[in-house]
Amino acid sequence: MRIEQVQLVKAPREQVFQAWSDYDAWPRFSGLFTRVTVAERAGNTVHVNAETKVMGRKARRTEKHFLTPPEQVLVSGETEGATNTTVWKFEPVPEGTLVTAVVEAELTGLTRVLGPFAKRKLQSLLRDWLRGLAKYSEAKYPSVG
Image (tube, rainbow, N blue to C red; front, side, top):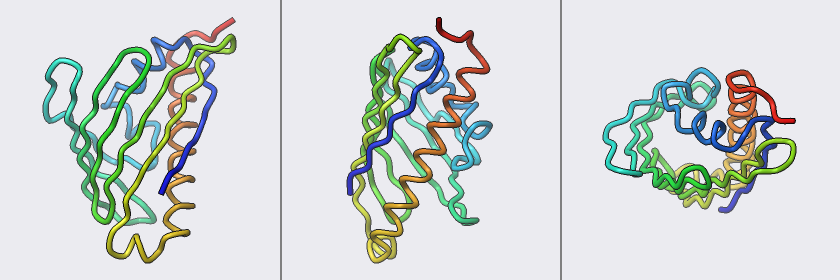
């Protein structure tokens, strides 16, 4: 399953990238992540352990992030019922930064059975996460232009 979402953030690219990689802030601007812990940092690779909450149900999630500041982050993630890779791109535009997330997910078990519903839910969660990132970034950093 492939999902792509784009969000304009009215803040400079470097600051949006910095906000994205502020793992402690994720639970503050995202309804998806209730807890995020950096398990290990080695150069531009970060291992993240997280707790997510979807439709009232909590689940454990692990992610490996390959950071290429300020252009891109490659994420390999795993949670109950799904594995995914996500490419996050941060593109400077006159209004600020265009953030694009492309998710490739493989669903297993019950999530596979729920197919179209799971895809719509993931689209909604990703859209909300991007909006939260935009709001957080725009509040934390001065606007562009």
